[in-house]
Length: 83
Image (cartoon, rainbow, N blue to C red):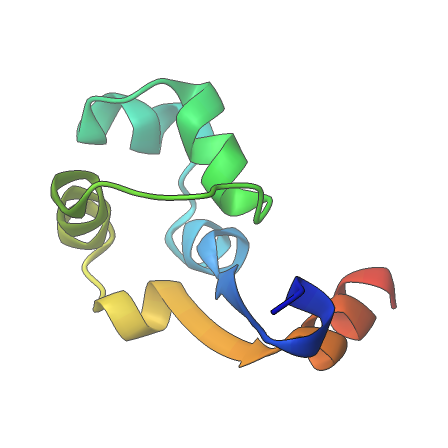
């Protein structure tokens, strides 16, 4: 099914980083990945994420997976991104 008809996973890293006063670079260093990897996730361009990376991000940010990622209808998610 084309993405516009399905659902998209949305990453809430912007909000979580801002709430903690943390930068992408600081998170990347703490997790052990490159800042580019974190940016790809943050900008909803990731196609996949390793569970080890996901759990490390949540551990560093002190959050649950559901606070980091959510799923929504593609049309709604795309409207939110453009608006």
